[in-house]
Length: 152
Image (tube, rainbow, N blue to C red):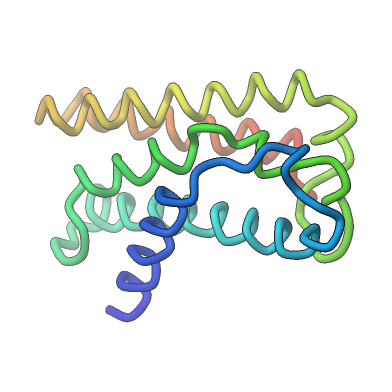
């Protein structure tokens, strides 16, 4: 239950804070920018895990799928902004290609954003087949980006 509360609090913080553009990160805040990115990415993972628990495993506790979907939409709005120049150091799972192939990374990020929006629409529709297909697309978009831009 504590993890759900932590995920919900993280989601609210992320949604209220909004995206941070690369030029907005002063040099004395770079380490915090990395930690912020990691928190947002962990929140996304937690939301996906919550949806898996509900859709695949049948758990009915925690936030509803509508809240989970809204969280995914909020956290995928501008993924590239979470990776400003100068934050490619320390304990990060991001590969150098995030920055050297910014266009490709932006395309993969856009796929995640679109998949999250489709998932939210599918949740609202209530159609189980549409919902499962849309959630698979979310997973596929995460996997596609991780395969290309996350250290294995």
